[in-house]
Amino acid sequence: MKYVAEVREGNLTTVTEFILQGLPNHPELEVPLFFIYLVIYILTVLGNILIILITMDPALHTPMYFFLRVLSFLEIWYISVTIPQMLVNFLSEVKSISYIGCAAQLFFLFFFGISECFLLACMAYDRYVAICHPLRYHHIMNRRVCLALTVLSWIYGTIVSLVQTIWVFTFPFCGSNQINYFFCDVTPLITLACTDTSLFELQLFTITMLCNFIPFCLILLSYIVIILTIFKMASAEGRQKAFSTCSSHLIVVMLYYGASGLIYLRPKSTTSLESNKVIALLYTTVTPILNPVIYSLRNKEVKGALWRFFGGGLKRNTILSQKTIGVQILLSDQLSSSRNPE
Image (cartoon, rainbow, N blue to C red):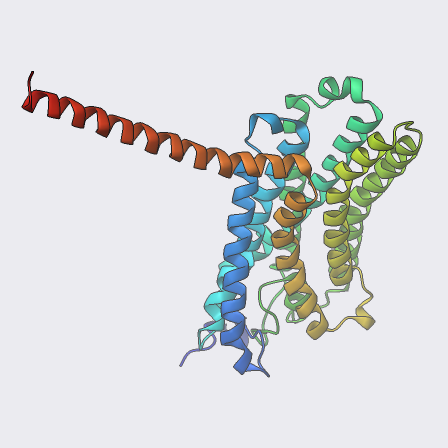
């Protein structure tokens, strides 16, 4: 049985595929985990698709829900980068991934993660304008601005992801190809490199700080101004409504930045791959699956659109059934009249 595909150049062995070990010490958990993560994946994809469809409601054609649609779109692809490969590996004896496949997985993991960081900052800016400058909201957050912010977050994500992925895969992996992880992430990959990676690790820490810290500071600054503005509102109902429009976004921000910080910003001396594996599973699944739940349960407008979405469909089906019955009765009467002419 082949576990490592390799080519030899003199005495150098070059890795051409990797083995994703997952849970090497607990193989009995793989089948239960397969069903658990299959359910999580299906619910996440369906939940975020539902959010996209619901926010197409004419009453929700605002910048806030435009960004929410984009966020749900990113969450679908973000979880699809890792979970399908994990599901295959849970049931496979040889848990391999090709060299190119590993590089692609790492690139898209970076891309969707970084894009989401900046998109969350864009959503915070949207809330700032809506609450602090309500009369100018639709003028400032017009369609062109929303599209520009989204595209810029994707462009920045693409550039950073390309640099990181290319740099990682310029390292020679000339030893073991066993990755003690569920997917190709940067931390377990660089431990396999047979060269000094200290410069890359310093750069990775710096980039992670910039990609997390700058958007987080923008979010924090936005919410400081938002909170100060809310406390100045005379109406208690207005304050409650303003807080409710921000609470869902704040919960998602705390979940996302908290998990990413635990993985990428801890000192190397306190980092263990075993603890990172657990955090990574939460990081790549909990936020995407909770995103539609948080926005559905904590947002009255989304709940209203959800009711209209399903209620409207039920109403349309009822009307269609009534029309069908009416046509059948009319045809029956006409047929009876033709058979029994007066």
